[in-house]
Length: 88
Image 1 (cartoon, rainbow, N blue to C red):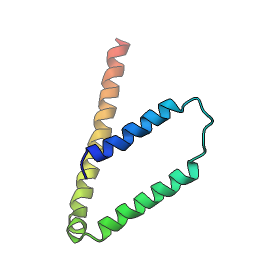
Image 2: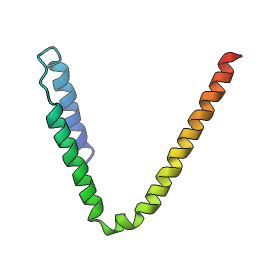
Image 3: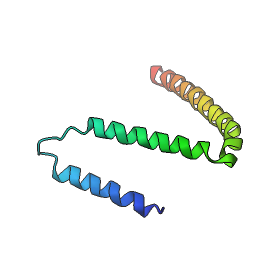
Image 4: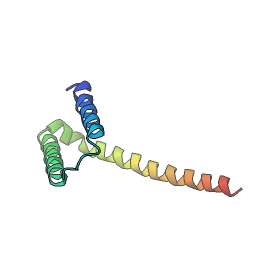
Protein backbone atom coordinates (compact mmCIF):
# COMPACT_ATOMS: atom_id res chain seq x y z
CA UNK A 1 0.00 0.00 0.00
CA UNK A 2 1.48 3.31 -1.03
CA UNK A 3 1.00 6.70 0.51
CA UNK A 4 -0.83 7.80 -2.62
CA UNK A 5 -3.49 5.13 -2.08
CA UNK A 6 -4.22 6.76 1.28
CA UNK A 7 -4.06 10.38 0.16
CA UNK A 8 -6.40 10.02 -2.82
CA UNK A 9 -9.45 8.82 -0.82
CA UNK A 10 -8.76 11.51 1.79
CA UNK A 11 -8.59 14.22 -0.88
CA UNK A 12 -11.77 12.93 -2.57
CA UNK A 13 -13.57 12.92 0.78
CA UNK A 14 -12.47 16.47 1.52
CA UNK A 15 -13.54 17.60 -1.96
CA UNK A 16 -16.95 15.92 -1.68
CA UNK A 17 -17.46 17.34 1.79
CA UNK A 18 -16.62 20.80 0.50
CA UNK A 19 -18.92 20.52 -2.53
CA UNK A 20 -21.83 19.05 -0.56
CA UNK A 21 -21.47 21.18 2.59
CA UNK A 22 -24.72 23.09 2.04
CA UNK A 23 -26.87 20.02 1.44
CA UNK A 24 -28.91 18.09 3.96
CA UNK A 25 -26.55 16.04 6.10
CA UNK A 26 -26.79 12.29 6.11
CA UNK A 27 -26.45 10.62 9.51
CA UNK A 28 -23.45 8.33 9.28
CA UNK A 29 -22.82 7.89 13.00
CA UNK A 30 -23.72 4.20 13.17
CA UNK A 31 -21.91 3.35 9.93
CA UNK A 32 -18.79 5.21 11.07
CA UNK A 33 -18.86 3.43 14.42
CA UNK A 34 -19.19 0.04 12.71
CA UNK A 35 -16.25 0.76 10.41
CA UNK A 36 -14.11 1.92 13.34
CA UNK A 37 -14.94 -1.23 15.31
CA UNK A 38 -14.03 -3.39 12.29
CA UNK A 39 -10.74 -1.52 11.86
CA UNK A 40 -9.85 -1.95 15.55
CA UNK A 41 -10.71 -5.65 15.36
CA UNK A 42 -8.55 -6.03 12.24
CA UNK A 43 -5.66 -4.29 13.96
CA UNK A 44 -5.97 -6.55 17.00
CA UNK A 45 -6.21 -9.63 14.80
CA UNK A 46 -3.10 -8.56 12.89
CA UNK A 47 -1.16 -8.01 16.09
CA UNK A 48 -2.34 -11.28 17.63
CA UNK A 49 -1.40 -13.33 14.59
CA UNK A 50 2.12 -11.89 14.26
CA UNK A 51 4.55 -13.73 16.57
CA UNK A 52 7.41 -11.29 16.01
CA UNK A 53 5.22 -8.35 16.91
CA UNK A 54 3.91 -10.11 20.02
CA UNK A 55 7.49 -10.72 21.17
CA UNK A 56 8.36 -7.03 20.65
CA UNK A 57 5.17 -5.72 22.27
CA UNK A 58 6.58 -5.32 25.82
CA UNK A 59 9.51 -3.25 24.51
CA UNK A 60 7.22 -1.14 22.32
CA UNK A 61 4.84 -0.65 25.24
CA UNK A 62 7.67 0.42 27.54
CA UNK A 63 8.96 2.89 24.96
CA UNK A 64 5.44 4.28 24.48
CA UNK A 65 5.11 4.69 28.26
CA UNK A 66 8.42 6.57 28.49
CA UNK A 67 7.50 8.84 25.57
CA UNK A 68 4.08 9.56 27.09
CA UNK A 69 5.46 10.36 30.54
CA UNK A 70 8.20 12.61 29.12
CA UNK A 71 5.67 14.40 26.91
CA UNK A 72 3.43 15.12 29.90
CA UNK A 73 6.34 16.23 32.10
CA UNK A 74 7.79 18.56 29.46
CA UNK A 75 4.32 19.98 28.72
CA UNK A 76 3.85 20.80 32.39
CA UNK A 77 7.34 22.31 32.59
CA UNK A 78 6.81 24.51 29.53
CA UNK A 79 3.39 25.69 30.75
CA UNK A 80 4.89 26.64 34.13
CA UNK A 81 7.79 28.42 32.43
CA UNK A 82 5.39 30.22 30.09
CA UNK A 83 3.21 31.38 33.00
CA UNK A 84 6.25 32.74 34.81
CA UNK A 85 7.26 34.67 31.70
CA UNK A 86 3.76 36.13 31.24
CA UNK A 87 3.42 37.21 34.89
CA UNK A 88 6.63 39.24 34.70
